[in-house]
Image (cartoon, rainbow, N blue to C red; front, side, top):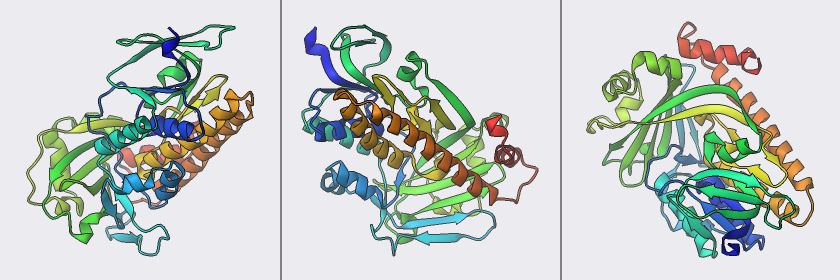
Length: 373
């Protein structure tokens, strides 16, 4: 049974979970186990990362390996927000250079392989089912899975995303501030090498906002983020209805003009939420399990990597008998979330063109403070 006992077990093998594992290994914590429910084969939202993500890759000691992956450069962004005119923000004078548009499946698999290259134990296609805490045991947390032997550990990390499956077992609760949904499709575009297509494009519309970015393999990802109630009324799960709205966009449609209409949509819930608390004795949450940010912030991947580095430091201290790191981690997650809400509220407040539209009426309600009620 001791063959399945670890200092740290991480449930979830996405960017937050693998970054935590890599950071732990770099700190000399050798006994780390990651369990991923999927197989790194399904599309995931979250393709753009800012230039300063380079500093996080360097702290994880994986920047050179990441650079060799040749993800698409992101030279900056266009946005049609608050007016019909396109605003422009480039990375020309950014000290870190360009950002990146990621192939998320390849990126997530890359991080998993970096962890395994450090002799980390990782299994995929394995779903977490339950946990129990055994007092007076060297490895007090017992984890159960649907298709894997039980695992015992001293510390467990919840990297299960929005569901926060592990943290809920410890009594943590998710405080929902806002809930939206994104619908995305991938278009085969042969001119993604053009500089104008290496910039992200953001366009506010009556129903929400569109996003477009080039990703590797001559693909463009196009997504519409809207309110769940609006999505149901417009029946946006049906690709033809989504595509009809796309055709009426002022700028996004021009980026994929001439491309074949994909017959499949991917959809994700995109909430703003905070786990309370995000850490406790013997456990903590990282990434979207700790706090979910609106994709308008473009901080999902960056936050996941930063969380991993912060979490690893706190865990290493806890394993050595110092719980202060967990307190600092909890405070940091909450502080970052409050700052995020302020930035998000400011950004949505800049759009005043559709004062009676349901999507924008609801966003103004949140701005007025109803999200805290």
